[in-house]
Image (cartoon, rainbow over all chains, first blue to last red; front, side, top):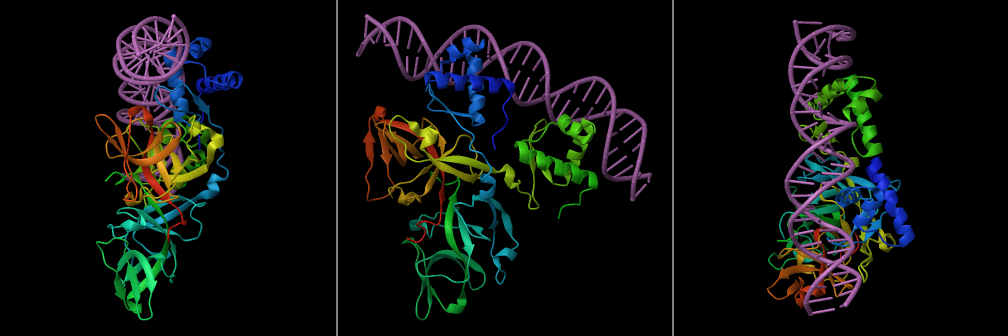
Length: 211
Length: 211
DNA sequence: ATAACATTTACATTAGCATTGACATTTATC
DNA sequence: GATAAATGTCAATGCTAATGTAAATGTTAT
């Protein structure tokens, strides 16, 4: 949702559009300033405001190119917003939608994450590092009580410990395999493991991007 | 559990929600006052009551921003959505912000990705695998023309080839280091490399989660 | 009585817009 | 290439209108 423009900002934007349409390029600050009868720095300030409000975009620091951004319209965007709970701790025996300990909500793009009753889980540790899942990442999960081989799942072990691992079903046991040579595969009896969901995506924020 | 609202408080809250949904920002006290047919100080008092009951949150003393809170104390999703363009290819001539080059928009949570004028870039290849960035991931980036050592950046090489690598500045060259033993560091003269932004996050969809 | 709600008024703060001038960077010109 | 001109940036500053705050006070409903 773009913020509304003030009268002055609209005036400058209209002027820019007209100029760019006519000449193909943006006029210099001082040219614009003179034609708008204000100072060059005033134009620069308004341009900054227009950029902050996402009506234009500029390139590098001293670049002279300005792109006018069309309204992308948020009619469809409202249908794409999806709010999913971030689960703090998984409590045994409760289905996902009944989990109590929320750490809050996460907003995701429904176009990328289709499905219902999705939930998010904050990853603890680096056991899935080689699958591109790092400590503190948010794993987007779809609730499921079963899993196929090689899928990355959220599993509850001994009804208390939640973990994200790659799933393998063997004839007599379930193997939960980490993706990090520092960790080892664990094998469990069928009744020791409860599948809670399948990981369908990852959201990583600014934390820990640069070690 | 939050205290119940009075009829009047509920009315004002509904009004605020509607206004914020429509305009993206909270109306001024006097605007609201006029539309609710009361005085501006009355609105201020009700806002104070709403804040005490944790239905809204306001920033500084004289700040004009109001956040609507949900029952968990999170900011409402309508105030957290942020659309960012997905850049298809960064190529010669820097048409990076030319809208026709965009592959669409991505909806992200503003709480996780603060900052303005963000853009997303689809990762090609696995050269950053050990940094938890895989092929086809969407890298969330903040525009920047400079970088600090060890940061993961989007760089344009020889004005045509865009790449995501870890950045190192040496006395006589710039090193762009991949995070994958199958690839090698590349060193460039200063004028060969143009920094376009810093990677501040990753969004990975269902594709490629299970190799 | 008390809390919620309302008003009026004076005051403090902020946003938007403008200016100027020094400076860094790019572009043009020779 | 070197130099000059043009251009974008930044910081400091001032002004005005719009805006939020606070205090004193009155009204209404429970």
